[in-house]
Image (cartoon, rainbow, N blue to C red; front, side, top):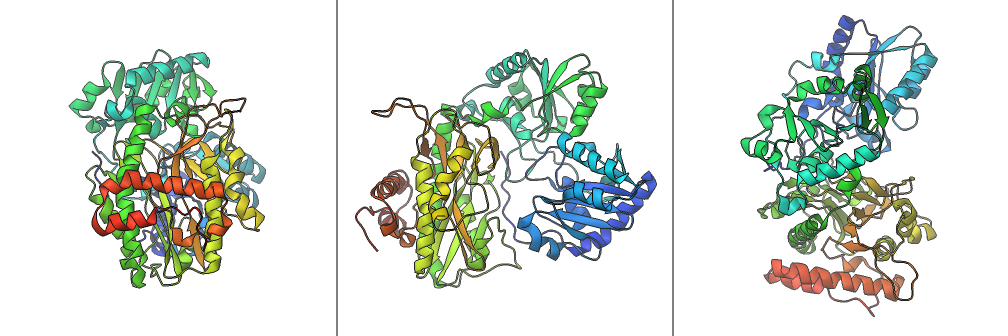
Length: 612
């Protein structure tokens, strides 16, 4: 259904964007009587991946990262990024036009409070800001004597005269064999939750929630099979689907049935205004300030609560879990062929990061079920591997040099599941330090795979397990340990996660999370080991007093034994690794043959009792 998009390695953006487009934006601001304008990276749908028509921050600044913001005034401008992008922003954004600022520390709010001039009017598009973010901006503006002005038409869109058209890809049914529950049942469940929460209806603005609720998928953005749209669901389970009518096929119309009304997305504002007198549930973390303001202006009472679809979507049913198993087995066949290639041809030292990423994509493309990558492959050799979210380009491309490590983080989108896997492999002979650090990361990975925990436990409470071995030696990593993953939806899904940052959402059976501890030596190498795992149903432990939840590992691909110092592993850890490799061999060996099959047998031989 989705049209597969190959990964490209030319980086969009550059300093010329700002030089060409900031004057155009300032001219549009003059016409509106504004002194400045706020440009967040987020679009109307709060997407992780944006359609080209919503790349407003890129168009204004030339910055192509996945998180950031800008503020353009008549006589000055600033661009804001987090620590991942401090080098990239200086390459892509003209420093003579923009000041480089910290998105996390100072942020837009701090800049306005410190640099805003009394009497200035700064415009914003309420469709692009969350209610919480807008409240902070208003407080900062008030302190600076600045007025924030909501605009009906975004001046970036006005100035962007060659703006790409909005995507119009078909919305198609997601088969019940993969969904595991028809949308009438889902709508009934969500309606009951809305009613129990004291509301009459709920506004759903997150495209993944809409796709899950109506059992549909689309291809309006790359890497995630989403239809850009909005919805209102009533407490009785009926719903209105606001979507471009050109995207709806006769098959999809029949699939949706009579209890889902179809209206053009352009009428979403009218639909919100028609909620007069109702109590309407809205998630302030996914819906924009414009949604809340439109509801309140129309006479609705707004109930700010979590998207009622989010947790049911996160708890995969039996069909979704089995689909994920099968997708991972299929994906594992391609990964094993790639790992064999890395252990043979790529050991020459002449292969580069782009060639390696292209090789992996070519192997996945042999699978007829593949619909897209689930994200752009992270292909990091040598020191590039030390950037946890590195994206290879023609300018940064390095060789998989002998005596170095290669880190590859990749995934695929299949109708029955979404995959995400990271493996680290040696090119040539690894150093003793590399093996020690890899084994410390592996110990954390194994601990988070083996753990049993009582109902009500959160990912925050488990995070230390993945870091313990590193902490004891004075090391750590600066990213989360695990994120939720969708079922043929986004590769990053909430509300659950495993990280230091507080998260109050307990891990429930059916939730899929990644397990990806790492270690990154600046200018040296990167190490990460990532599998996906699903929370299992409660089970009694012999001699225990309470039933415990656990994890079942879904990803099936060898962990490179040449990087393991077995002397650092306990007997229990070795037993887990041997058991995991036995599972990999059982599930993947039927999918490969010849030299690859022979390699897989060797790569999954038991390590118990072995010593370096």
